[in-house]
Image (tube, rainbow, N blue to C red; front, side):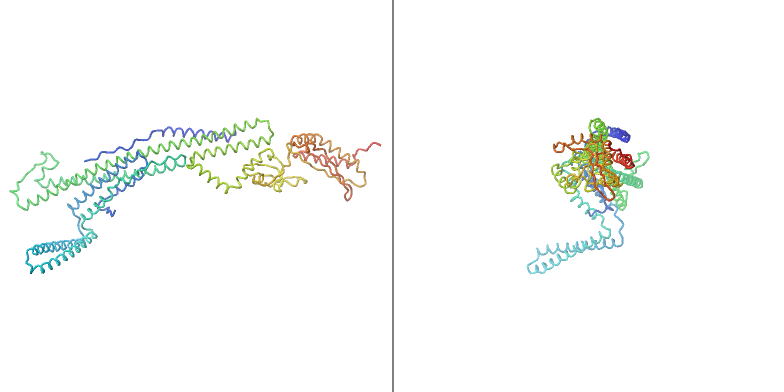
Length: 608
């Protein structure tokens, strides 16, 4: 195993230990459903009655997608609705007890309403009297009385229109708070009491596998928990506000009781602290009696408002408790999702770790095989790429989960990939052809699409050559790397000039002067070439005989061949011989040196 693989394996093992710790910490089971708390004994105008808590509960109820959340959502809706009913009753009582100060415009509208009411009352009384007179009147006067009655009814209808218009003007001017609150309460009773429909009634969402789906679900649960925390915080603020109003009104009531001696016996103080003095109604004047009665009624109304505050505070405390339990339930779902996500991460890390060790193990096994070096390298490449593709497929399967409609998905994906990735698919299939028996290997000298060179890389999709010159030239590399898509192995053709030993035909060309007898020199050159290539000729013929199964090709000869032809200034001698591709430059240099020595006069003389 290489050093980089060792470092990667150590990092992955540490991550697996960390994930295992998180997996153990998030193993707690889901919490039980939110228990119901027992009940204690929009043209919405927020300045009159705040309906936000009920709307918040309705919005949160729509997020109760799990069965164990729905009882809590239903209880939150019930408590919020009950609290709003109490708020409406309290607002009506306070509006009647402490009517707001009207503006000049509102006072004018109120005066119009009072005048319209009086005029309507007068016309109603007159119409009633005329109706009674019509019954008792003689026939001679009935026509006149009936005409007056019709006119009176028309006047009543006109008065009613005037009264309605005046009331609308009063509402727009900010007056008639009681009617506005009653209108809001009526709208609430007609629409908001059907809050149970806000809770989802369908089945729970299907549990989707895959790390990506788990991350999305955890994010949704986190957003829901934030909304629940905001709702609980708003409820706590409302409790504090109502408590302040309750304490202020309680102190005001105690002050009013202390001021009026007749009401002192209702105070919270003990008998030793307060001396209750009762005065008989006969000992007081009529105005004093009326004033005392008015103050008593006002005190009674304040006591009812105080009791309403107590009920609302208790209701909101129960609502805050329900939100808190709901938050705990969502947190339990989050832990469960995180538990499953950590398991998926651990599986991915295990696949990566197994891939690293499997790659090293396969390399060790392949290196022990008794095969050709190029075949071993090809097998190592195939196994490594196959292992990487398999690991990537498993990781994607864990990350995204299995597709829902597997057959449809595979069909559509296959058709789309076939069209969009045709070249890559053909190239990948061509890679298997190149890895086969008649393919090419690293270090082979090949010709692909008219480009010759040495194979330096064979990938799943591309083959890279180090370009060289023409085979009849020196064959030195040009320094250019040429990349081909592996589709040429299927759609085109290629030439492989390398056998097992990378045998190559090379040629030695010499021009002999015409003044000398060329035959002794030709025989000497041929003898030198035969001596230099004797061993390689035998090896090449043996490998060629093993590489071919055709009888016609089994007799191929690798012996040097010589040709002679006249040229200007002498005779050209060309000797073709077999050599290894890696040794051809050294062998050519050796033969050239021998030819120079022969041309210099060291030609052996034939026996006389």
